[in-house]
Length: 31
Image 1 (cartoon, one colour):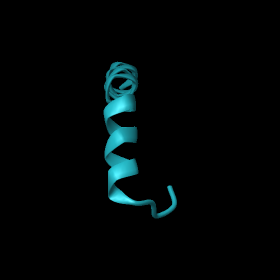
Image 2 (cartoon, rainbow, N blue to C red; image 1 turned 135 degrees about the vertical axis):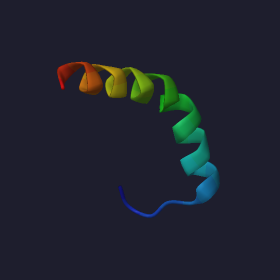
Image 3 (cartoon, one colour; image 1 turned 120 degrees about the vertical axis):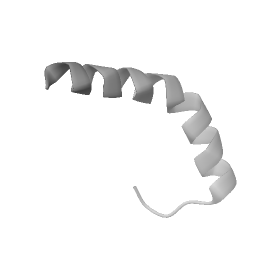
Image 4 (cartoon, helix red, strand yellow; image 1 turned 30 degrees about the vertical axis):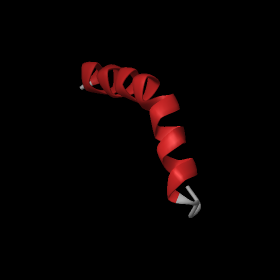
């Protein structure tokens, strides 16, 4: 990910936090 301004980054993280967590769970389940 390219360097972006922290406010945008935080908003993106908030928006994607849930799906990132789900992706992590899926990833862990694959182990």
